[in-house]
Image (tube, rainbow, N blue to C red):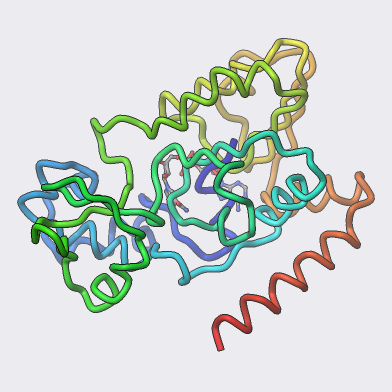
Length: 257
Ligand code: CNA
């Protein structure tokens, strides 16, 4: 399970930090309160603030970091049953974790849907519009097209229900870079069998690690990257990580140039 904390080392600000947070930078649009950018009613009246955020987070602006590549290495080794993420920055995909191993619980910019005719599009089709500060419109019916990010009150993607079969099958649960405050995502931490070790890598103790610890819970507190590095060293995977990261860096450099 992952959250915004795995992407802060990539330079993606959180939403609420005064000054640097994305919410603060939406003030120019005079929105009544920051959360309005994720409300459908507000979006239909004024989609601009949401597309300002979309421009920032659209795939391609940021690169995955050590934490994302650790999860990719778990996949390469056939150890990743599924990665449940709350992040909408697409860095798990950018790190090479295939979409079928992912549950993007709060949605993705990789696909988009027309708010009128419900036609589906690849998110990439609207990159030009979003980068040019234009609200994208459906080619078929001219309705506003919304990236498939889960807004307040919207249902989580169908794939979220994979948790019903995934969590009872897990042998180990990593919880990385999340405050475990957003439901229903947060409750997944309690869905693994009680004999299954849960490993928290985060700046602070969160959720059940703080208030309902199990005897086999482990918490590695501090910076996410530092915590993952410690684990990689203990696993003796340092070289593999370096090789993987170098290979992926070269790929991204080639793509950028
Ligand atoms: P959160 O509530 O902001 O919690 C983040 C957690 O990560 C906190 O416990 C922090 O202490 C911890 N943290 C942050 N940076 C580090 C670091 N470098 N090292 C160690 N710990 C760190 O974020 P959640 O993901 O739990 O929460 C919910 C919202 C925020 C989700 O709906 C996300 O979609 C949304 N969000 C996503 C992004 C993104 O996609 N990158 C960015 C900001 C917010």
